[in-house]
Length: 208
Length: 208
Image 1 (cartoon, rainbow over the protein chains, first blue to last red):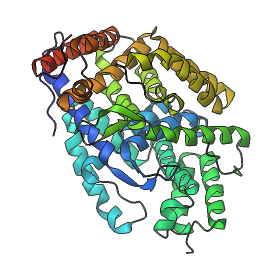
Image 2 (cartoon, rainbow over the protein chains, first blue to last red; image 1 turned 135 degrees about the vertical axis):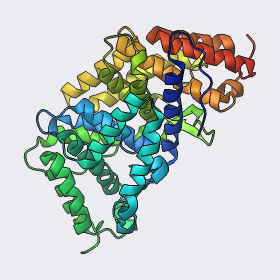
Image 3 (tube, rainbow over the protein chains, first blue to last red; image 1 turned 90 degrees about the horizontal axis):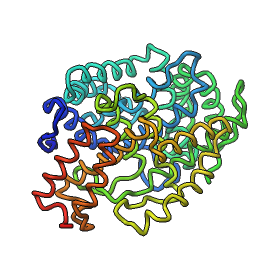
């Protein structure tokens, strides 16, 4: 853990600001957590921090495809936070069923530690948002998850199959992810469906 | 420019969605634009996309230090967009006066191209937000800029002077950046002031 410089500033609660700085410094580590998928130009693997940025941007660009009444500011707030647990838990490849088994436990333990670095009111708020994202019971969480699932599909399509080809991912496995997208946004789900049909025609997906 | 896969999805305006996908794919390039400062652990240089993510997070953590009535959702939206022009214009080192001279022109030309990839209503909206950030005439823009200036100071302090030491940056040069922070947030300005006083004591800043 990186300890922040001592706070000598006037007019602020030093302990509170120190907690906030500790959280901001700790979350810098998300820039070093690598995902399986590549950048769109195929040059290297993507890290969690830049991935989260791209989702925050995409969620607003695609906002019109969220169900009416979806609060996009909350969606963005959720997406900015959604992968922070991977600082401790690591990135889990969504097509690896052995990894995904223990994922929920590892991520909850990580959430217990990392969000708790913040002052108590902010710790509660951020943890509740992360829990909401994971539970996918609100339109905001479902739309956030849809954008999170769509982004690597775009990257895979644009890198001639990317992780699909490298890990022999089947059409059926991808179809499960399309369902999650459709669940958050029928329009984006329909686009994702068309995208994987095209990917199958191009031989990017394994049979099965 | 990466062309998106043809859109065959039902129930959406194909041309509109294609423009949105083109923008999302194009902005992937921000992940390859390197800044001068290092990650907090000193392991490598930071890129613009992960930097923008970290600011979006920090702006919300530090929201209470913004002037009352500041719309933090707009601040976050601005921060997510603020560096996109650097895809064409490149990162400009803020202490290099030769570079900063031509920066405004290069960035405006970049904004003319990149935001215009979006459908017209979204192009206008994102461009207006970026112009607002650059002009620093609203509380949101001033707070966004304050967070943008504070983040590399934290990274520099935590990497034993980082770019300050490497480029012989003086206390006076950094003081100009502290003014920008104080202008957006008196509390964060006061913290930044204390931080650079401490940095000077440690010999991280050059005389002058």
